[in-house]
Structure formats: C-alpha cells, structure tokens
Image 1 (cartoon, rainbow, N blue to C red):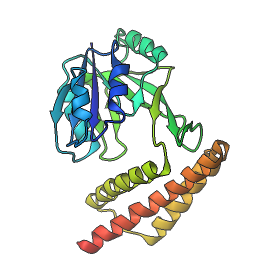
Image 2: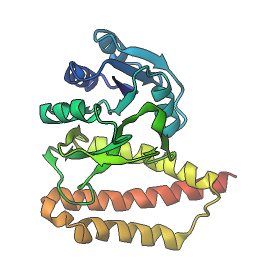
Image 3: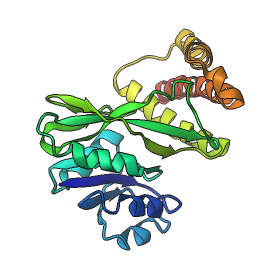
Length: 246
C-alpha cells in the first residue's frame, strides 16, 4: 500500500538507521541515487531496497522520478537523515485507509546542532510528505513542495529530522543550496541587485531571530539566523558571478 521514496548521495551515516526505521511501515523502498561513492548502496541492498541511478539535476525531478518507480498506491517521501516515530507510524497506517484525502501534511521536528529548533523559522515545519501516487507531484527546483489535487488532511505526530550536527555540515549544505538557488534565479531571468542582496540578508536575520522568536532557541537561534543571512548573501553573489561569466 505504501512506497517509501528516498534520494541519496553518500548517506552511509544515515541510511541504515532510516531503513531499519521503515520496516513494518512500508511495502517497498525506492532509492534513487545520484552517484554515491561510499557504502550507501551496499547498506541499502541489505534491506532489499529497489535501487535506481539518476544524475541529479534538481530536487523535484529527482523525487518525481523516484515516485514514478513506485508500485504502491501511496508515496511516503523521506530523507536519509529522517526517522518515523512509532506514534506517527500508527497514524500513517490509519491515514492511508481513508478515501477522503489524497494527501497529508506531516509535521517535522528539526534537530540542528544537537537540539530541537522550536523557533527560528524552522518550526512549525509542515509539508505534504504522504500522498496518493496518482494525485500529486513535486514542484520547484529548490525548496520543493508536493502539490496534490483534491483534499489534504493533516497528521498530528511529527517525523524527526536529524539535521546538521555541526556548523561545518550546515555551511556545506548552505553552499550547495545557494548554488542551486542562484542557478534557478538565473534561468528565470532574475538580475543581480546589490540592494536586494543586502536587504534580503538583513531581512532574513531579523525575521528568523526576532519575528520568528529565534532568540528563544538560545545561541543556536542566533547562529542559525546569522548563517541564513550569510546564505542570502551567497545566493546573490553567486548570481552576480553567473551574470559575469555570461
């Protein structure tokens, strides 16, 4: 009834924990890998996952392609660094029996720098991660979302996102995403603006730390707000670099 879809690249630190966690919940596991050079695929084979290769171009295409390989009626999209607690497993099993909804929003708890981030624009974090295969698909090249035709319900229990354990991982991720976002902006014809570069950076910090109460997350809230303001600078600088090369 449920196909779990996962896209991977060098996830040997996370993949086994996730696959163990999915046992008893899903009927098949689809992994679309974009060229792992570690033990990701070796570990995945132990759990009889169906493994496919696809060169990465953007997240929506990668995840839609993974969903196209699924044989079950429902898609549960999970990342390698996530896990599904028992209470959510029970809720998911009941949810897919319903004929009323074509998809479900699922809350997510984000653990960053060793602690759950409850503010700072990381919470509430609700997205559609469970949907009928024939009723939804991913859209957006960066920070993608599932769009579902029909009625969407909402589950109460949260999945757990074991996100960046240290600042090095966080900065590495920001570097990757800022490259993707700047490329997407360039393709859309968005032009570099020094005003927007500084304004977006200033806005990002203040929204996260003040408006979204990031200060209640303590030093982590400050570090994350500051890091995301730098992320905005990176996006616009990379856009400027793309225009310069053109």
